[in-house]
Image 1 (cartoon, helix red, strand yellow):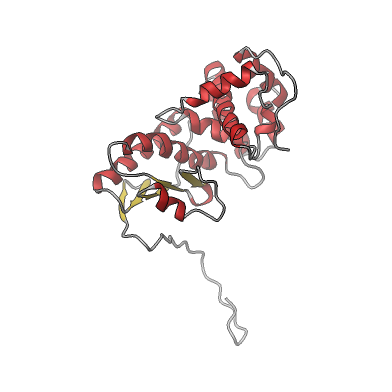
Image 2 (tube, rainbow, N blue to C red; image 1 turned 180 degrees about the horizontal axis):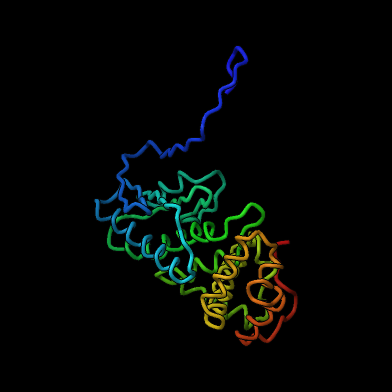
Length: 266
């Protein structure tokens, strides 16, 4: 801070947790996981803490990762009120999102009979994004989108049944997107975006089933060291990105591309 007379004041960094002041928030916490909600009773918040804690524990055990940063979730009581809090021009289909830099999940979950299922589907997914960020954090590079979304999809306690159908259709029509094209932003086209999620889930499932959880742990470790995308797969898996792409497609029994390749991000 520079004062009017030119004197400068420097302080230690501080973090301030600001939350939407339109609502009367309750907090449920176990130390490593904190959940803020205004809808539902205390058991609603405790359920969310339990779901995210299970995810955190399972992730750490499966990938031998020591997770030290607490994570938080802010739960709006319904989709409309959640969407009111989204940044301008956010897609209408978003039901939750993660802010890894802040170890924060924001979602809309309505209390009631379907709340547990929705938490097991969405909160597990979004919490994993925070955990992948912690496991791979470095100053030079970030985990590829296929790895981040693929692990998150595989860790959902409630699966996305449409992903199998979407993947099967893409295989039958010979229009799988290359792994290399799934390392950054997914396509803006909704159908191709869903296909990208389905493929990412399949790639990670292939690695776990064929090479064990250790393969994912090695990828996390490689990215944490700050290597490039090309170097990460070679260091962790002993194969190039193109060789990973070929091995995964062979595992699927993919017949090969047919006709024009799908539009993919650059």
